[in-house]
Image (cartoon, rainbow, N blue to C red; front, side, top):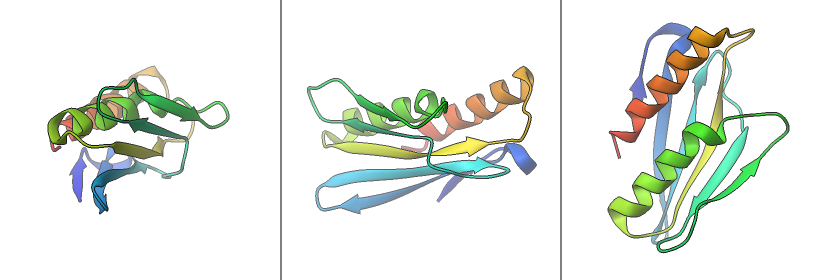
Length: 105
């Protein structure tokens, strides 16, 4: 498992191999959840499933795209990061921490 950040701004990512495909579970903050799923197949555009009013797809999409590009196989990123009553600076920090996870792929 890869992690980045500290305290309630810590995010994590776990990779699972499912046959020839990759699944990345992403969570963190005060409460991990499933806010979105992104599927990226080689040679195709990423497909996004967004649950409710969640914006987690914005940090999941770069993960699925990077994994698909690097390994040349289907990659799925699913999960979510939540901090209660987060302000703009806190959201920006969580997004930046998730972007650091992309470097672990």
